[in-house]
Amino acid sequence: MTYEVLSHTERLRNKVFAIFTDDVAMPGGGSALRDYMVHVGAVGVVAVDTAGRVALVRQYRPAVRQVLWELPAGLVDVEGEPLVDAAARELAEEVDLAAATWDLLAEVHPSPGCSNEKIRLFLARDISPVPETSRHTRTHEEAELELHWVDLDTAVGMALSGEVTNAACMVGILGAAHARDRDWKPLRPAATAT
Image (cartoon, rainbow, N blue to C red):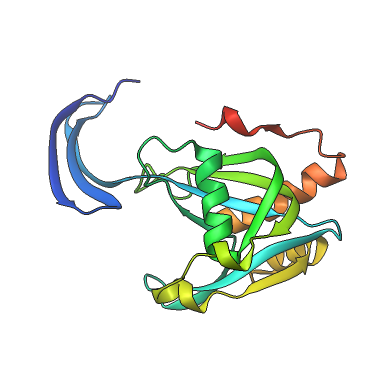
């Protein structure tokens, strides 16, 4: 089926996303107006330590007016930065951690009914702390972030019970558990993220 875009109108733009309205020709005839968000993209990190724990944070999200369980994550907003480098930057900025081993775990469209946003989820292992002198100064909501090391199986239970509702966090937790249970074989090289 072909959905031809008859017109494309920008409604709003900021540094993270733009809102558009397209008039789209429908295959059965006629057309329909469709609103959606074009997003800069994001990365998330499933950092797993040698004890089998995953690094989670609690972060306030204004859109849902709640503090949610989440992965260290952030925007792809540095021009030309490789995606795995963006993930490493976010891991350091949000929870003061570095990793020696990086793999691509999943690529996710969290809400394709209204956005083109794509989150690339990386598995980070061989974890170490960022030296005190190199740590990022967090501001706004990020200033309140606290690192919580949660047993990966416990985190799976949190995802399946509804305690974790952030889509990227759920996919990351479940994907990491799946990969762990298969001796990390289903992983892809970090550089293959698109």
